[in-house]
Image (tube, rainbow, N blue to C red; front, side, top):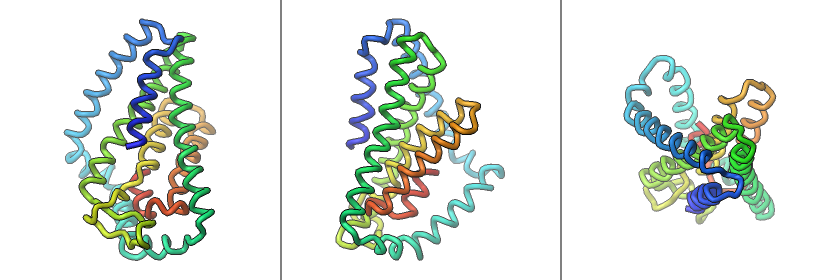
Length: 221
């Protein structure tokens, strides 16, 4: 819920930002409606797209790796982390890292509006939309699986036990932002940087004992 509030509050703040002109707000509203339609269309076509050969090429390895982690890897790996200071440091970093991604996208939106740089504004807006949409989908997945988090009574990650572990919301939101930026830029170094940063934010949820490795893998995917 904290991530949703952050995205919503950030969106409100951007809407009333002094540098955001009326035209910028109008353009943003139009794009938001278009992107909302694209999201609904994507969800509707997801079952068909999931069985296309070019998608199965990466879906099947991810599914196999997830199954192996759930069956054999998640619990032993989680129980390797016993240091409370390591957990606190990793948790702090993951929160700060995700905040930097969302805050950076928000700042880019305001700057793009103020300087009439439509490409920058549109990319930043799409990144925030992606984070918000992905977070909502992640909440639905959490509700459907109810997996216990690793830090709860030395949990082994049981499903349908009232938890919120599967999938990692930090990984979901972080990679949503990174994927938008990576697809909107032609700079290879920037693509590597944003994906690397998202990976750092996501993987830090493991030593923080907030998520199992399979939660992070599916969230990032």
